[in-house]
Length: 369
Image (cartoon, rainbow, N blue to C red; front, side):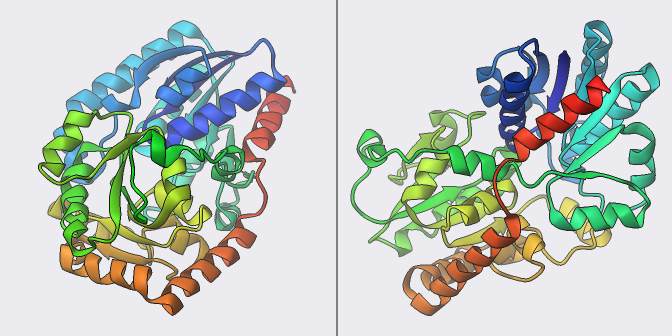
């Protein structure tokens, strides 16, 4: 069968790649075409557009890049219509993917939406549109099942695919030597994969490095950037960047500073104490605070429905406050252990790996029916 996947950011690329592997294992004739990234490309098929050309986050940023977004959308629609897949699989990325889903529905293509849009966070009436344009919806957060049920919509809960990625990862015992890292304990910096995230968050992360001379700070580089891009932020600071080794970095880290997003949950699953950071365009943040009705921004806190990790957002995302929180994580044993104990409870709530395989089984079963 022919599968057309659409991922617009790094996390979607990861989940898309794992789903492709699971589909191939069950459908030897599987053909893939996709908007995605390096991980999906490694699974084969045809990469139509890299997510690095698509990842805009924030109301103002989207408005400023609307021409590019509409151009990408037009290109995607034309490519789907020309290739005629058996199913289109949008992966999260709702601002783009829900419009593509509407087009596909109109043209008669099946739409299996993988990883539900976070409509529970704001404008919940979007569920009515999802019911119209999506044939099957696959959810990865436990509370989403009850949410959609309250809107009289049946969904498939498949668990969280991040568990798959974490479970299969094999620790690289030579990581330190291969990256010329010393023996000092590591503070991992995960500043995100979008340009505006780096611009807003990475300087604040780097500003605290001098406060902790007994630790080495290491940046998890996004595949959409290169060494020179990070050098424009690090300047004369000796802060190394490692690419395509985020999980190995986390496995060797003593603590982490993490931009809000999927990486917060990955960091928790590797049991690394963390501070969650976010800083963006002030107008975008003001609009978001007006329309988004959730208590937390990190997946860790959202899943547990209480504060497990500290969130420093916008005016609180300063070197002073980051340094204070990092000091507690590194040197306050009770505070540190409490977070690790809460990670154990998170593990129980997350369940077992196998989401990618379960999703592939369900998708193929629905298609064959």
